[in-house]
Each structure stands twice: as structure tokens, then as C-alpha cells.
Length: 108
Length: 119
View 1: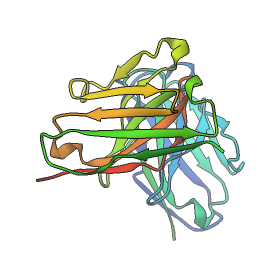
View 2 (view 1 turned 45 degrees about the horizontal axis):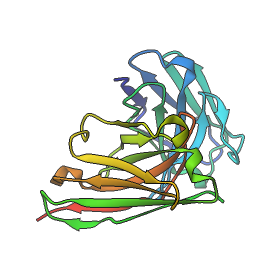
View 3 (view 1 turned 90 degrees about the vertical axis):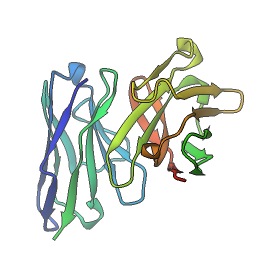
């Protein structure tokens, strides 16, 4: 099983700042089959990034993904109040499919 | 517009069974795999299993934690997938999500249905 470890647990930033979220895998995520989801309070997750760096349809370009192998990053430039959420990384290359524990992004 | 709507959740006693339904619309349901996830209160996301499309033989995979108690099925004529849950335990209390699988990627989620297992 691929274990995904996200850091930090919580990120508290001011509007307009840059958020950098990390996801580390316990083994190589082949084909960069790594996705990021955003989950706002009381809502279902929404796909932001797949293939480690490809933005899903309709996702603003202030969201970007990078990385390969075992280290991946989600960056939110110019943080907006509506970005308050928990962000999960997810590997979909190997069964069982797994998620990281999430990073909570708060606005100061 | 792609939509997935879960139903069938509620309060159930330990040891009892429950069947969840997931109705898809806005896309050709039979062309996609369906994956089930759950999220316990205040916790992260857990993959439960998936059922592939008819094109891939409708093959099913389960997470080890639920393999002996949960069964996934689908009726493409009705655009519905099911999650049959037997011998429910208190630790099965969670919001259950069905999702659409585009190739190997989960791209759309339903809003979820809450299952509470309690006496």
C-alpha cells in the first residue's frame, strides 16, 4: 500500500499570499498518477489536479501541481477567501487507492 | 451536467444491513467505472472499491477492510450503482460517496449519504 503523508497539517495565511502544500509517498507513484482534491466544509471533494500537474476543467490557474516520483506539491498563488478548505493528495496508480491525511488551509 | 446522487443512508443498528444507491446523469453511465469511498466524521477519505464498466467485464475490486462484508454492483439500464453493506459495525459510520472513474481517475463525486451505525 502506498502511504501518502501531507504537510503541514494546517496552513494559516493571509489573502493574496502563496500556499505550498506537500505530499510525500512511501514509494514511487508511477506515471505521476497523483491527484489533488479540494474539500470545502460539508461538501464533496472536487478534483483540482491530476497527473501531478494537469489542472482539471474549470480550475483557476492560481492552482498548480508539481513533482514526480515520491514528492509532490500543490501551490496556490494569491490565496483567496474562497480557497478555505482541506486539500487531499491521492494516488490512483496502485490498489488500494489511498489519500493523504489532508492539509487544512485557513485564512488569517 | 454530470451528476451523481447517493441515497439509502440512515441510522442502522450494528449487525444489520443497508444498501446504498448511486444514480448518475449527464453522461453515459455504462461507459464509466464507479468507485465508492467513505469519510468517517472528522476524518480523511477511504477507498472502498470499484466496479468497472461492461467494456472491462464489470470487474470489481474491494478494499481489504470491507471485502468480506460489502458488495458493489451496477444496473446500467437504470444508471445506478449499488453498495450492499452487511454486518455493519459502529466503525462503518461515515459519509459514503460514489464517484465516476474516468479511466483510473476519480473525476466527479456525489454529495454523499450519511450512514450511522448505532444501537
